[in-house]
Amino acid sequence: MEQRILQSLLVPSAYPEPTTSVNLVQTHVSFLFITDNFVYKIKKPVELGFLNFTTLDRRRFYCDEEVRLNRRLCPDMYLGVIEVRESLGGALFNGQGKVIDYAVKMKRLPEERMLDRLLREGNVTDDDIRRIARTIGEFHLTAVQGEEINGYGSTTSIRLNWDENFQQITEFVPLVITKRDLHIIMDWVDIFLSEHEGLFAERISRGHIRDCDGDIHMENICLADHIYIFDCIEFNNRFRYSDTAADIAFLLMDFDFHERRDFSGIFLSEYIEITGDRNVIMVLDFYKIYRAFVRGKVESFRLLDPNIPEDEKRTAQERATRYFLLARGYVIRSKLPSALVITCGLMGSGKSRLASALAFELGMELYSSDAMRKKIAHLSEFSHDFSEYGKGIYSAGFDEATYDNLLARAEKALVAGQRVIIDATFRKKNNRLLFRALAEKLAVPFYIVVTVCPEYIAKERLEERMKSPCTVSDGRWELFRKQAEDFELPAADEERLICVDTSLPTRDTIDTILNAMEIL
Image (cartoon, rainbow, N blue to C red; front, top):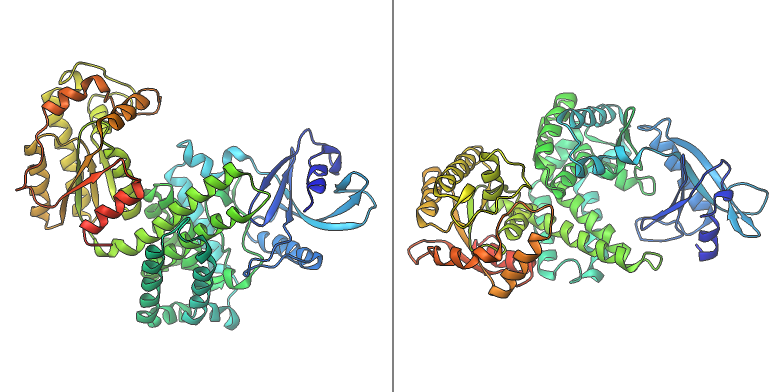
């Protein structure tokens, strides 16, 4: 769309109802003009292989389809298709000029009630997740099915979708995914499809291939007067005709991406209760990999869009990389069904960032000594105790209570079959031995990740951390030397030590750890 047209549609008088402002938001395939009470969505004239909006007739057709299909879950939100007309100043949504495009007109939903925002603000409850699960489950039970739709659940059709994904992402290697990681995913998908043809055939025979939504993630869910699930796939039947497992896998993957795996269990339990689909678990990881890969691909497409500012492109690149790392993580987790990992390093050595990245990719339960210490002391997470070294909540007594509590948390999670990582200094050998003994008792692999970096980097990190209001740690540079003198370095007899330099990119450091674990 010409810049002149875009600018003209940012003028309030271009709209059929009064509005005080107009804001433009772009996706890789759409322009969304947001007014006080409505949203007007114009499709970009693009062709991406899996969609084609290049002609006016196509855009009109898919606008009509978008309204028809989204009214299944949002009957009062999608108001209809409106014409975009030519004017002397460019374009507007009323008047008598030539029709130059079409837009879907929607009721504007309250942004403060969008699920992704509610999650960031910590305002999502377990009951909210159950309500969403019930809404989706009931939708799936009544969604259209039939012989044509069943064909999209076959391994042949699924391979076609995967092959398209692999082909389309090649131009973004190694910008968002390395060649090795791409082949790890490609090989796993090929083997899974080859070895589980009967499983996919059973999903078809049980009636789980339906005319689904195709795009259920947190940004497309609003918890307002009722549950709105909007913006389904309208542009390609083979992305919407799918296993219901693939439909919910998108949201479950999204919970993982935002590090709220606890919501996945709540959702899945309620969904299975509603639908009775207990074997959905058999294919969920496969489809979560698919959803993470597609999401990474979509973010990558934004890098080629000339209308998107450079700062947004940098964010898109970071998000794409994270999605592909999550997809890889799903693949390699099967090689580490349960494990206990502890960090070991001085303050400022990068333990917490590394532990968080490893937990994200491997789906590990992450327990932090900093957070545990504050909890034991009945302090808020971001409050601080700047006592002298070894005093206050950092006394020997608090240390012992902190590690005892971490040990108990780790045991409970490991008994439940989870992977666990403990983010703590572990400067005393006896603490490391306690956790090693727990791993041996439960017969799970045990690793000590030793974090090191140049002192000037540790100093920079500690000083930068002190400026942040959202840091849990009380570590600061003036205590660094005393902690270093008090540190009992791991000895050679402590097996499965993995030493990493955290001054290197986190992505490379994680690969070093995964290679040492022999799971990459």
